[in-house]
Image (cartoon, rainbow over all chains, first blue to last red; front, side):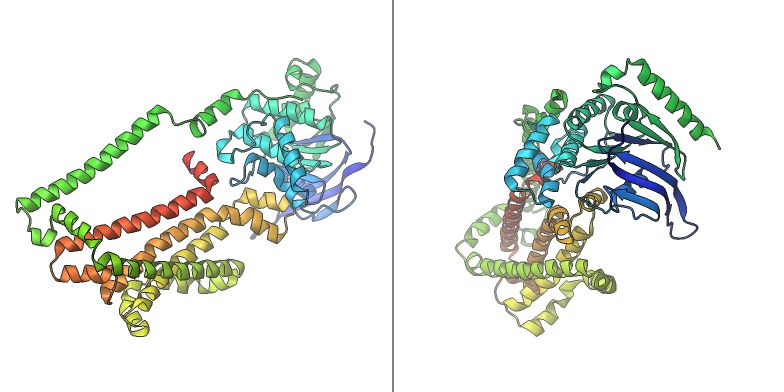
Length: 261
Length: 282
């Protein structure tokens, strides 16, 4: 694909976890990766390999130790404007209604109250929760909570979306519906996405490129270009030969990564 | 735009928490009340019969019918007109001063956790000390009147509220802390938007407990000695073998404390609707 501005530029990034006593644990080994504007890139790999750690480095939640890493040209810092982070768990504030939760990032960003409420209502309608704006977290199902979290993540029009297995806690049906919603919302925005998942089908469905990482310490094992036409439909893809071809080749490679050694 | 059809999950959720109370729940409610009333009727009835039939000595245990008459007479006596207001004033003063002090000290200890680490064992030791034992000394220090009762009340309330405040403000939900960090919240925003609202239920629970203890402090102080107050009257009636009047005052005390606690719970429900909704779902 044609490279425009690179939103994420990582060169020879390595990372260790300090375990207090004993030798530091080597988590990331020499990852170099660039993600272009408006590109959707997924990180997949064996569980516990360091996918989330890399995402946290890009988010500035983890301090960079070795290598070069920039987000939109500058060093990543937690809460950098224009970046939104979506977690595996919804992290909704239980004392806020769905609408108030969606408003939260906009409050911190200083968006005027009337505009916040308008945007929150619009986003909740887009994720199919137009009737649940006044419900508290405890009144929402897991799938609904995750959709509120998605609306919250998108509320500040981020140019970079960092997502850490955002749909992992959902049942298969709801997950596919959420993938579809994410694709349709992103189709109208110029948003770059770095997406961590252990669901290879999800990675192939959503991504322009899928980055397969090795076992810990994670290094880039292989990068797959997902040349499926857009707009994509997660359900229709289930019957697509090219989709299954890509899925099988990534599975094959991941299988050798998991079983080797 | 795609709109999800989520009627099954929405229907399930709202059926429980939003729609009108199903008849099955009303049935359960009625049974609960029947058991409650039957239990009281059984205990009081057994007490009445045992006293009437002289199975127990009514001079020692009283008799429910006489207790009710004595209870009604309290309303035209100094017990309700003087002693009850005295006890309530001591209780509320002890609660207000002790509660405020507990909240402030708790917040201070959370802010300067080194101070808390240093003083925590001493606070724990003081808290495990049976403070009722201090009542005679408080009489020496603050006199036989209200001040010594308020002091005892404060000494109980302050630790309860302090420990609850520290627990409420240090309990951190990791997900919420991470969210605050990822959104780049300032330390002030973190406190106001991420920590305090979540701590309020526990702070209120600490205050509710504090109220119970402030009653305890006031009554215990009065039992040791004083000129006015329900505790003074209780001690007097017990010492003079007026068992029925003793129980009548105890009944008054039980009703008053229940009313005050219920009022506090009602305020809490109104203020913390989200928390109430959450507890109901569990």
